[in-house]
Amino acid sequence: MSQVIVSGIITGSLYALAALGLVLIFKTSDVVNFSQGEMAMFCTFIAYTFMTFIGLPYYIAFPLTIVCAGILGVIVYRLIIKPLSKSNVLSIMIATLGLIMILNGLAGNLFGFETRSFPKLINAKT
Image (cartoon, rainbow, N blue to C red; front, side):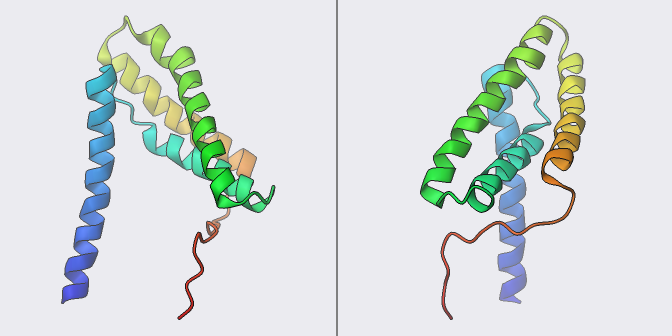
């Protein structure tokens, strides 16, 4: 019974974290960015590439991924959000929904469509 409660708290925390991200972006920029999950997924694939194919350790791959995420954010802002800033909220929402499809397809074409496991940070011995 306690495992079900802990699992429910963990799942609810993940939903709360996603909602907090949406609210934080909306309150700071007045943009409802539905593509934040796909942007995080794309950056996770970048970190995966740094760690597995290039062979960088975690403490180097993580800051490089943060820099790549910042660059991706600037590109999205300059190419999609800023040109639509004078239009209505619905247009920006539709653009971020389109960005979901673009990032999803781009990630699939660049990194493949098969499921992969992210490298472990700590190898715990049991």
